[in-house]
Image (cartoon, rainbow, N blue to C red; front, side, top):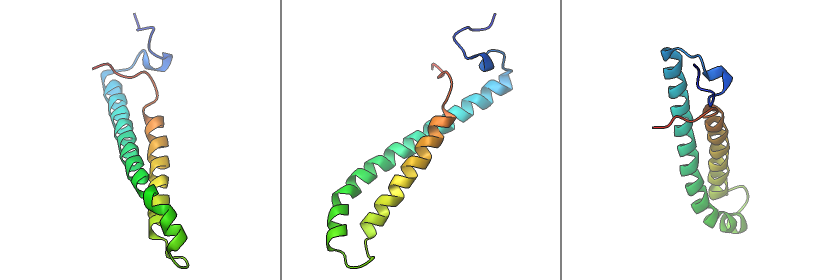
Length: 92
């Protein structure tokens, strides 16, 4: 009998499909870790962004650009990681 705790689309998977599902979820977890690490980096960059925007002349705002890139990486990897990790988590 199928496990009723699993979503209906995961109840009757073959071993190869289960392995592919585990790999997808592992990749999603990796992307979430990368997003978390860049969140720490963005927090540290935030310490310099205000000063950079206040005192750097013209369009020369390297810390603000690095901060914007870090935020973009966080959003992309975070959303992708959440999408890949959807479903019931595996218990190890």
